[in-house]
Each structure stands twice: as C-alpha cells, then as structure tokens.
Length: 224
Ligand SMILES: Cc1cc2nc3c(=O)[nH]c(=O)nc-3n(C[C@H](O)[C@H](O)[C@H](O)COP(=O)(O)O)c2cc1C
Image (cartoon, rainbow, N blue to C red):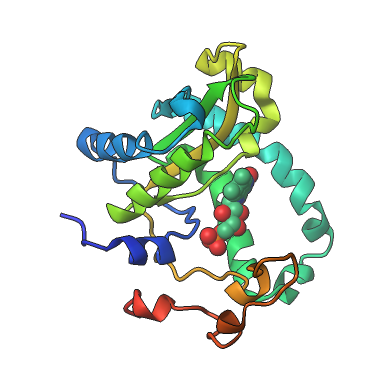
C-alpha cells in the first residue's frame, strides 16, 4: 500500500526522478495511472492521444541505445572539461547526474510510456497531449512512483516509429520512463510567483506575491 498524499503535496513534490528500483509496475497500478491520464482535457474533447507502454526489454534497450546520441552531444563540453560539472550549482549538478544515469540505465526502467497524438488535429500541437502527460506524472507520484519527460530516444525517430509501429498520421510528443524511484520526491525548485505572474499588464508586479517567501507555500504541504 503506498503512502497517501493529497493533491497539493503531490503537486509540490512531483519532481523529475530518473533512477528506479527494479520493481515491476503491476497492471492495476499501471491502469490507475493511465485511467487518471485520460481524464485530462483535450481540444474539442478529441482525446486523440494514444499511449504505448513499452515494457519489453529488447525495445527498452533500443531506446537506451538511441539516448546516447543527444547525450554525447550534450555532454561533450563536460568530457573535455569535467571540472565544469563540479562548478555547477548543486541542483543542476544532481540533475545532470540523474540524466546521465538514465541514459545508461533506461532499459531498467520498468516502463517507458510513449505519448502520441493525431498530426494536424489541433491548432496548438501538444496542448492536447501535455495535460494528459502531467496527469500521468501526478498520478504516478500519488501512487509512490515517479518519472519525467525524457525525449533523448526521439533523436532516432524513424527507427523508433518503425519499432513501435507508429502510424504516419501520429506525432510522437514525448517519452516517459516511470517506476518506483530510489531518489526522494520533491521539493520543487522554481522561480517565485512574484517573478512570473503579472497583474493586468505584462510586467506589472503583484504586491501580494512580492511579500511571499521565495519558495512559495510548499511548507504547507510538505513534511520535511
Ligand atoms: C517538454 C519537456 C521535455 C523534456 N525533455 C527532457 C529530456 O529530453 N531529457 C531529460 O532528461 N529531461 C527532460 N525533461 C524534464 C525536465 O528537464 C524537467 O521536468 C525539469 O528540469 C524540471 O525538473 P524538476 O521537476 O525535477 O525540477 C523535459 C520536460 C518537458 C516538460
């Protein structure tokens, strides 16, 4: 039985986690996560999202293999100057390490969920897919699992499409490795409300937000 967390604690702690225990995800847990994902809104309630849950080892190994391409490009600067990693702020350093871990262990994630939608169906592509993605990640968090968007395998999109038999009229929006995390959930580091929310006009500061703490109100929801 997983711990019970309320809606706001879930929102404030569902950070991107990329290291997983080997524990499988049972079908009833997976069903609950997907059943929550498809409660999301979509334009005209089209629900043209489709999800492929990749559990098969060989397929996950291919996803892992393809992840190496963007990682090599991305990490090139650190290969030449590994000391740059140590100079990063702590949170960035840890997140870089967790990305590196996933690049080398993606095949061990119990499931990688590939999110699709009909090409040309909506005027704001993605707007009808990512609400379901967020529902999915929050539902996973609520059940003690975790995950994140991880699009590195999209660097080999033609091969990915062929392997998963994705029809040409579908866009691949993202991939979501999920599982039971070895790292802790939350808290989430974000720019404060005062810096990103304006009143009535772009750039107009919101007095009330100016007076709130930098980390917002997460302390109301998270037992540290
Ligand atoms: C559209 C989108 C694409 C992303 N692509 C990747 C990706 O390719 N690789 C990766 O490691 N993380 C990816 N992420 C995860 C973000 O890096 C992560 O959600 C963000 O840094 C916040 O992390 P936090 O919630 O742990 O603070 C993506 C997230 C989004 C929303």
